[in-house]
Image (cartoon, rainbow, N blue to C red; front, side, top):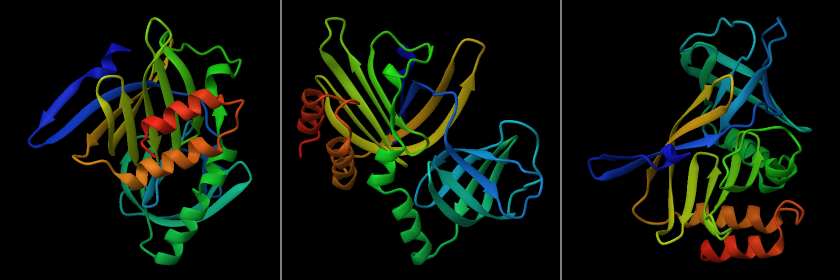
Amino acid sequence: MDRHLNLIKTGYKEIEKRIFPRFPFSYLTFKGKERSDGHVFEVMDISYLGMQICLKNGGHSYITGHDIEGTVHWKGAKLNTIGTVKWVKGTRLGVSFIDSVDFENKVKKFLSVKNIIAGMRPVHNSGLELDLPANLKYWIRADGPVELFIWQHADGELSKFQFILLDHFVEWEDGKGLRTGLVLSKIDYDTPLSFEDEFLFQFEENLNLDVTQMAHRVISEMPEDYLNTDICNFLKTKLGI
């Protein structure tokens, strides 16, 4: 996993690449309202402004500029969506949601901390035969919106954690401190032996306190059997809240 340390400098903005393991399936799905062929898309990413969806099997007829309407389902919660296809890359679509205060409030309710917690699962002790990096201590995910990776040194002490929160990112690393940033892109790589995601993050000059506070809330409400109290307190201390 050394590739996750690759660094790119672009002008005055610092952009860094990370490679993370990817869970092979998701409970966050989208089905178009006008479609009669029964296709169900996996929601790869979602934020208050839009989502990236992928059709794992078969083809679709959506093109750039096409209006798209349907329902996002997530473990009992659902969100009726209206938007526009902004880009198409094979079986993947980028969708921009309708610009509406009322709809934005519905998205925020759908992506609430309560729903995030309900959709979470600890991957590190899921019992599935996944090829995880040796130094990845904890991996907790809530399908598309949220993932938490906690890494350790060879001696077992925690070395860093990375928190993906919708289209934002929080990272703390031993000796470097805490940073926040934006998710610029996400590309999935599948091989016969592994599933990985490549992220590009643009780090912010100053900490985004709204993002660190959301991370704190998620950690505070996480079940203790996902992360024990000591680990939770460690993360909350490093978040500085």
